[in-house]
Structure formats: structure tokens, C-alpha cells
Length: 171
Image 1 (cartoon, rainbow, N blue to C red):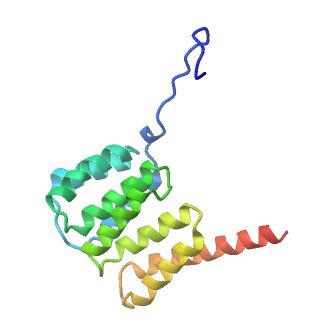
Image 2 (cartoon, rainbow, N blue to C red):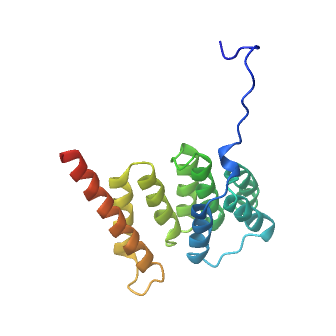
Image 3 (cartoon, rainbow, N blue to C red):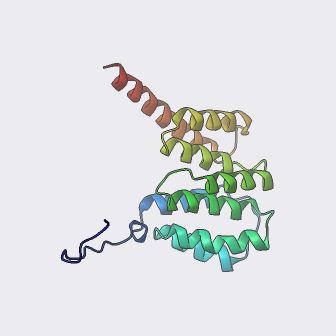
């Protein structure tokens, strides 16, 4: 039912092999929001490199070691959550939700978990949920927070996208 011996094979390259500017930006943004905690470089540095090259599954597998070694480290959980979202091609899997929850539990005042969870929700088509999380993060962020400008810009972009979607639906 699945194949035919008389037909030629058609191997394809795995989608994860190709790196992207988005992956590099996600790593850069996560580091910019860094909590100052330290996870040994033996995990984070290679995991970030794998994620930048689109090898999200391998990055998540490597980060399992980081969270096993330091289960209270929010940065490691956040990196794992982002890798799991990338591995699911931008979709928010149950494993990624669990990793985001663990990241928030480990670092409740850190902006990374709600920022990236909101981003993952928006990318998954759940724009209203992502927007609500970002609005709550913006409301609790100090006025001089270094991530506030980025969050405000992303929220404006999301609002414009939602407005375009509503206009398109009305036509």
C-alpha cells in the first residue's frame, strides 16, 4: 500500500537540516533576555549551534542533559522549549508547552518564557492567545526593561496582522 518496487526511490533531505535566519534570531533574542544564570557550556553552546543550523531535534536532545543536570534552570528549559517548537516546524507541541511551563516555574520573573510562548502561539495561528500573553508581559515589565521595545514592536506587528486577517475575512 505504501510503495511499489518498480517505482524509483525519491529520497528527500530532512527539513530540519536547513538553517534559517529565524533560528539564529531566536537564539540571539533568548540570549539577550538572559537571566544571568549559568548552564554549563557543554550543553548550551552546542545546542544553540544546532538550533542555528536547523537541527532542532538534536538541540532538544542535548538540552535534556542540561535540564536533567539543572532542573531549576529556566534558561535551559526555555532553550529546550524553543528547540521543540522549531522541531515541530513552528507548532506548539505538548512537550514544548511543558518546557515553557517549567521555564516559567524556574524563573517566574524572567521575560523569556512568556515572550517565546506568545511568539509560538502566534506562529501556530493562536494569535489572540499569544497577544494576551504579550500584553500581560508588557503590563508587568519595568518601563526601562531592555526587552520592552522589542516586545512593543512585536505586539504592534501582531496587532497589524490580526487587523489584516479580520479585514480579509470581512471581504
